[in-house]
Image (cartoon, rainbow, N blue to C red; front, top):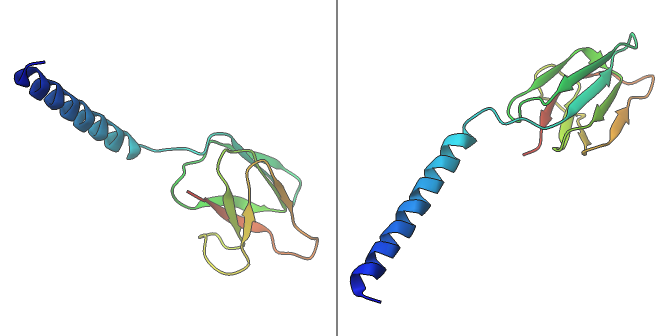
Length: 114
């Protein structure tokens, strides 16, 4: 194989790799979601479903949740505050449900683990 063909092939591979890297980097900035629903029950027994929440950020559970089911493909962390801060968090894995004791404060927000 001539030297020029090898150089062209290497240049083509390098260009393809660079293009693929730029494409992946550009798409990763888009709003990725946790595929599936987060379903929760409020203190008044209303059932609320959040479909495919964003992976980044803090998500409020308004007005508060006494039970949360994680039906997404990503684990979540439950918080007792509205801004995803503070102690007393609960890690809720994919396909699991957490139910508060009657004397516990409700869950007010969640964030995803990524």
